[in-house]
Image (cartoon, rainbow, N blue to C red; front, top):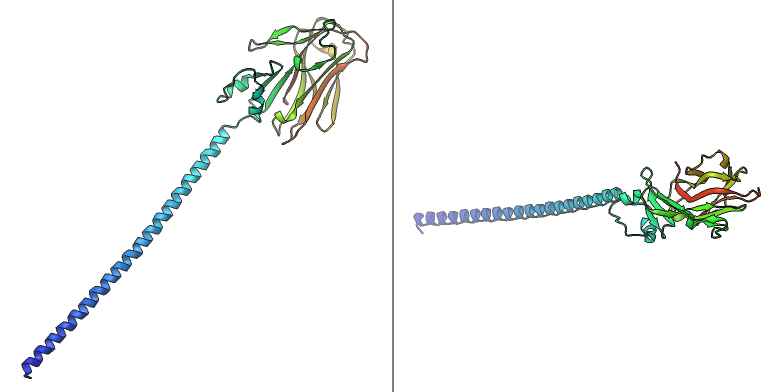
Length: 272
């Protein structure tokens, strides 16, 4: 073979080698590009999943915060739904103003309202819902009516002439707001004229555990023709406490005949 032909073969071989090298380089670069793209895609997917997770968490936190805020802003009175089952008329529970003003229960035998300061449940047990010895005997007791500030008419009990004064009431403690110190007071009025009140009357509060608080009240020192409060006692309402508080106003040992006392009822409310 001539020298010229050999030289041509070498050139061809060198060219092919260069082409193979160039091809391998291109393939390597292409694979590297693909791998880098896949890695970027995986990183992007991971970032996307992280963003979704963060957005979900933020949404959950926002929703929870909204519920918490809503629950706090809608701090509803204790057991108010159970209490309002006995309401004398339909109640708009979307507004607390009606609860602050007061709601009649059990055909005006009780009144329920919410104390603005403590947000505690308050009740007035009217005379019609109290147990009054000889209360239905017209020789001894009379049942006139009065107008409340709301212009509603309620019955009150008036002593015509008795020597045995005994008034008892009770109330379910589960309807009272836990964690609040409560007091029970009798709401009464001495008319003018009135007689037979020289001997102090007795008031008593009996708690669900049987503990009693007793005291005496001098009615001679009370103003005439004005509603006054006679404290029976006080107690702390504990969570999940059940039973009844009982309250009494009585005097039958002095033997004197009495006249001129009006009994509106007994208020159970946060201690003032």
